[in-house]
Length: 327
Image 1: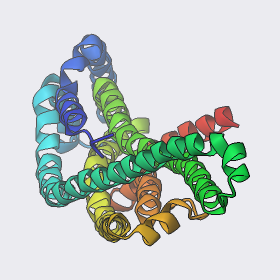
Image 2: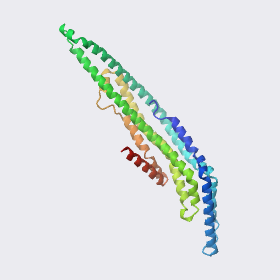
Image 3: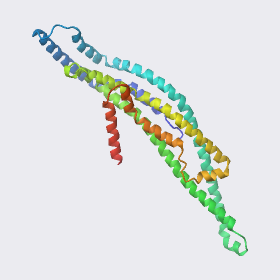
Image 4: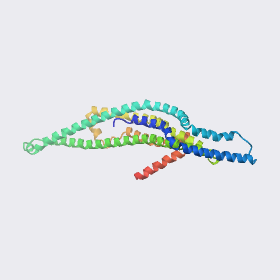
């Protein structure tokens, strides 16, 4: 896996997020109908109160349904206005991320190259094992001639240990591949959930504004705005978390690159490295796992900025359902 993060997927998801306003037309007429009925009932109720003398004539409260209906009529421009400050903040965070990801990707490729050199060297040593096995096939007649085979047998045992170490090394490569898959999954799933949640909010958002005309749902549009901003900040917070996490990832890469270079230059260190019982689990892989777990906290973190709980609860429910299926 040559790329730690596929930038093409990021670009695709960002394009989808900015184009979801085009999906609202399926429910657009329904929201307009609800808004028209709500306005008719609201004005009838207010007119009745004024006729009955329970309320004096007030102009400004009567403008509120018109403002909400105007938002519904101009829904796509309204979404663009909502996206403007979110995009500004997101671009700033993305610039921070871009400065780190280039160094991390370079370190990732350099580290993979060194690991491939270690694997190649282990394969060469395993090839020497076949030569040693051929030499031991004539053991009987060599013993009759009084030739000491102890050094040869010791060498063969050493190569068998190298073969075992190679199998262990292959399992560690598999473990590393799984860690990177988990890291990528946690990143991509956050951006995917952002698109899904934002699409639902945008598609059904006109209903929140239409129902806000009724006195019992007068704050529905404020709740919608808070949740939309909260979801819009998913990518911004993700870029910030990845920028911070990549500092740790870069540190782990540098340490492991130093170790791999030393291992390739020193035969004793090479044997100790491939025969290590620790499984070569490095801080690099640990930092990737920490970054993956931090990404899953984004729905909760976004509520610290805009006080809303609906989206984070939905994400938590999805996470609990996924955990239950795994168990």
